[in-house]
Length: 168
Image (tube, rainbow, N blue to C red; front, top):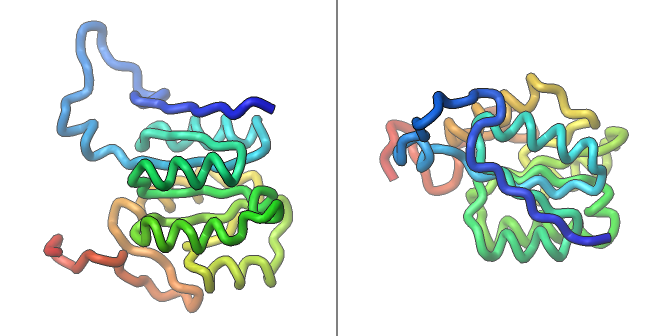
């Protein structure tokens, strides 16, 4: 199966007036998301939901996801559990070593508490059952924008390298 990389630059749900483009400042504040998903319909749906607020890149294999992570500074990674079962659970460790500020979310066909706990202990923000709801995607984007994440005990933790009040 050929590897496809999809990148969206403009919001899909907010058409711009002819002759107008997004301001450079608006483009700089857009989040960068990597969707590592084996299921084409789910990947397309996530791209559509995320592209409102993010530049989105897709990977269909663990190898491709790892290469993209090395070359890019992603704010969010949504990874398919099926990719992780094909030897990709170390992908979470890899992300945490290469880009510890990246929020990692695991998407599973069926929630498995053992896998969820293992992923969270490795550094994943959360695990969701597929299909991930629109509301869950909006909340993820809010967490990434605010720089906070939920710990397994439900308390909010600050994103590494950031402090409250916007100071580094």
